[in-house]
Length: 110
Image 1 (tube, rainbow, N blue to C red):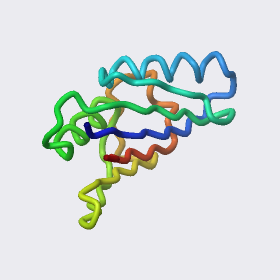
Image 2 (image 1 turned 90 degrees about the vertical axis):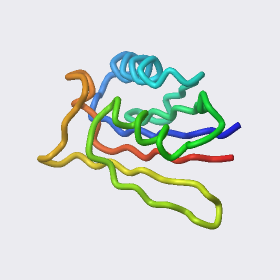
Image 3 (image 1 turned 60 degrees about the vertical axis):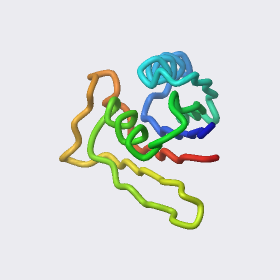
Image 4 (image 1 turned 180 degrees about the vertical axis):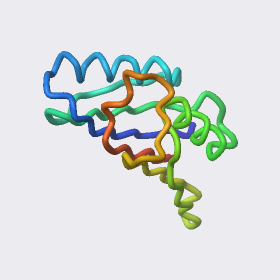
């Protein structure tokens, strides 16, 4: 079963706010997710794709639930992908509570 890892960096200062954001993100991804607060402003979410095929499309769809645009890198040797997000003027957040996200990295793993 293919898995993913999502690391989010936020500008939230209080742990309770970061915890709430992590819960919102895990709920929106709906993929058997667990999350950890790694540092003061960093969230680590680990999940499993619901389907064992077409992880590229699933990754694009999952990350688009949070915001857009993302930059994608295909790792041919491993048949994995990485999606990177960085806050800029062209960003569209899918929910207003996500506008505290500064950076994000989404990676698929086997």
